[in-house]
Length: 417
Figure 1: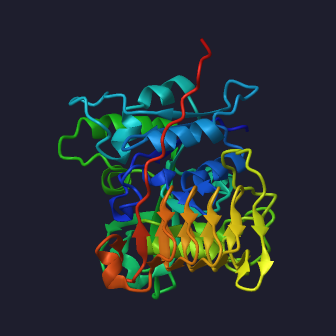
Figure 2: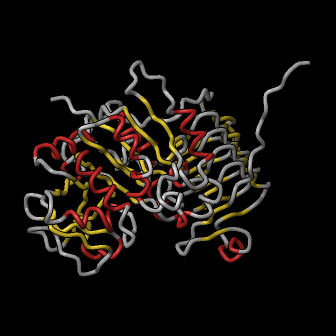
Figure 3: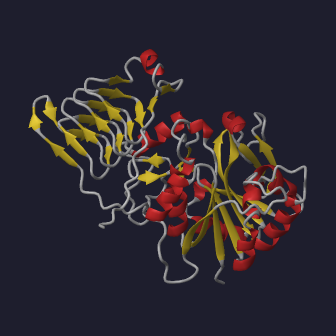
């Protein structure tokens, strides 16, 4: 049987814990590993899994995200069921509000489900960095004859306070949900770990529609899948947890641990980027059988110039994006975006540099994140004196310095008259 699958990507979160990187952009639009955006992970997982009918639900500070979707994901499919379409809030709730929760976001677009009449609806978040073969999760959902399946990942029980925890039997059947409780039940046969919900769901369409209508009329509900709809289904319908660590990605070596990171804070985001630039990265960006898709920019290659003592352009253990020129500067253990300039004598270490930054001569940067369009003056020092840095920049408790960018000017087309 060929299943009709409709996917929704929830891309409307504020991302307040990633501030100031989310000051002018939605969290899914935050750059990652140089040329990508966080939203590229879930969209690539869907496309690589053969799911081509995708609605992206946008909301807060969505302009940057919309531009990225236009540049990289507005492909013209040969068939009418191939699309990636951004959708704003439709104001279908009684109060004509913006999205009030994850379930309300789907409810406000319930007409899209009814019109498409899919067998299953895939509802995934866009806040995480991971690779996933979603087709395997759909097959699990069908084999179990589930009405809803929740992607889960084992984490140490000490982290139960940070996640929504799934209580499941040995066959994966869900018997309870526990929202951020330190004493949440552990995994069957493993008292050291709990099942954390990844916030990714598969629903059988009939039950999803039924529950969405009931939830919309419940004034006591927060209209959230994890807090309301899924817990209310426990005991009434078969719900199952899909163990993400059993997921197989084509092109990956057998036995490689499943990679999933919640990049909800500056520190977590920084560490995930450092994972990508490692010598043997846990997150493999070079798997041609499961490519990470993004906007197709017409960038020239990166260039490294000058070969003089004290003036040698080079990058070591780093990820470097197109259009970047290392003009006598040195970069180590870092992630560098597009069209960055690193001038003579400059040193960048353990840092993330977004697009269009300019690092002046002899400047020194350490454990920092530079947002787009930052201009670092000659001889400037960032990341060496945190007290001084706090007077001008955002500094995390772990000592990562975040330098806010400058809005770039919009270039308009000209008309000859």
